[in-house]
Image (cartoon, rainbow, N blue to C red; front, side, top):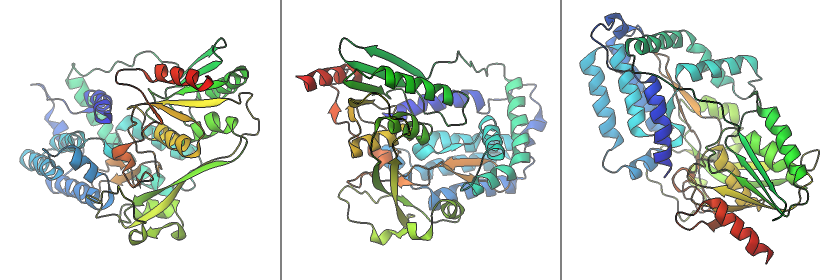
Length: 416
């Protein structure tokens, strides 16, 4: 399900940024481009493995999905690769390959130079209140990321087969009014952050579309190609204009109060927000395997207040979902189902939308490389893992049937 889709996404990243095999005339100085000793490389890798063990709560989900290839075997294999090679090139390849082989459960991935620069620019140009530790780690790694960027650029120059096609820019919104059926259709492919240059354009387009749909009885919002982004997008642009009253839902999320997580926990939560794991209510489908590091739980609330200007549309809302729905698009799905804001139609989602905060960062002490992962382990109302189980739609599509077809049938049946 989501593993296949995310593998396609990560395959693109791997093609673009993984270290290729050096050519015959490859510059040997690149092997030590990060300036690390062998002791420092091994120290970074061991720190990475230890921090995952005491801070990252998705490993149990990963192990259940991959019973034939344990994380311990993966760590052992790539640590040996570093030991036997004695180069920065082997270290980076081993680290990247470890993450690739583990999978992207809970947003686990390396921060690559292009993404790093965007994050650094963001924290220097925006209000980072409540995100001070994110900013601190990003700024600490600035010099190391200059080296990493130069190293990866040099590798690309050495291997002419490494090429990235940027493709044409696609519209984020797709709309259709069907007045003969009383139905409006809005497809949103990504939840843009409010600092994105197209955010305001989307805001205006959605406002106009909602008002143009005033005579419709049904609105279909399609997230089937949406794998997340910013929760603020759906809260402010999709939900707030369509409600007359405040709406909210609350779920539990687990976390580990580890050395790496603690500064992020202190940035985001008051001490009164944190409840000892022993006080977690009995939840019938909670699988505790892999959750030994969890120390606390919090109540994770999704809240939407009515917009200052109510949209003209006042009918029923249907939300199309499927395996691409993840992270912030998952949180919208959870919100819609729990509050009754919309009826979910389609197939199982891919989860990780409960307790969602920006992924936290792990900074490797010598190389300065940053690894991201989800600190919060969200639980569905029955205790099942949001990351593992996702959300089951209210109306399931038959095998092979597009969610839109199912929704249009449900719309018609609801009118009869």
